[in-house]
Image 1 (cartoon, rainbow, N blue to C red):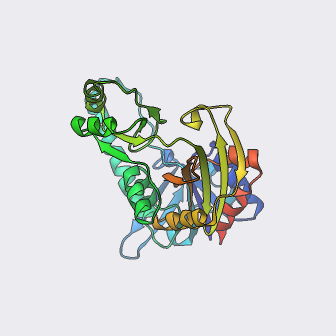
Image 2: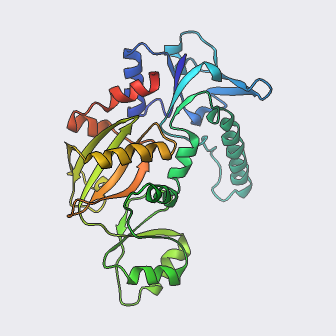
Length: 315
């Protein structure tokens, strides 16, 4: 049986996990989706509900020996780190036909890859459904709230009047993308918020939240284990702070249990849950990342996230 790693072969985290798998004598391969169709390809037969991954480049398979292909059913687990779209051909930026053709081609590529990504006999760490749910943070908030998690007062959308009313009821508000990709920012409150909000919401829908003062806690959930760190930073979003201080910490048992339940409810085997701990020691759920970065945190705290992750992939 084999382990698949979805991501770039030059990504530090993929390299790190590949080295750990190699040390544990596990058979693995790296599938960089950017090279789907050039470096590797798939064939799928619905009648047999199985498929083949065909390796067209030796660079993919040093750890696979001379094996030219692998069946879906021979893959024990798959670690999802990053989906990369196909390379864009050099062309004029105003060539709409080229742009349309690329979009259609990428749509066909991603749809075909779903034959593999939806194969249920593989232990997906994590499955495509969990990746998609992360791309809509309000869905995670809804599920977390049903499980009893505290969640910040939130608004999602692009209706100016409703957004203005929401902002007027909160002293401090932050806004962030509904899907992700950018860091959170404070809303610059004014006496008349409507013009500002209208200009912002005409560009794109936004997620507004009541700002929770306190300490940022990140909990890595790996099966039934929880590893947590405290992140001290002067920035609203610690990812903007190169001087952020990261230390290991222990969170209350009821919050640990909630983290495990959240991970399972979101269809994940592992994740990184971001909490905001208030001055009254109340934990507010912010989001659960299904493909988190962990190398820096592991290095700074000495917590063995890699070992636990390899156990998840190989067990």
